[in-house]
Length: 169
Image (tube, rainbow, N blue to C red):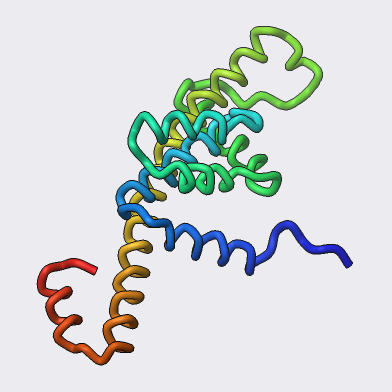
């Protein structure tokens, strides 16, 4: 039996890799949020290409921006697009469009496209802001635990107290 491309262990490895990036938590979280933003938008496979220059421009971690784009994959994309379309349709006040051959009509196609784009921008922005906050918190917690383990293994309780007082880890 072949190896699965999607498994819980591979997700855990990616998350651990994200936590161990040698950069500030803010830059890592910013990079991941950038990747999520471009991953949710209907970029049709070009999310990584768009996320790298954005990460450079906003001084974010480039590797984290690549990892963030992976929120969009064959399993999540249909849900992202459907949800984004619904958000855009509701905001623009359009009636639901059944997906039929009538969509070839340019006016209906433009309404669907506009709904998808507006909804995707709102959904991508919301999801990227949430992912920034979550990743920042997770990295901080991970690094505090790693620091605490290191301090306990050296048997230096003063090292633990000093770092807690200064807020550093």
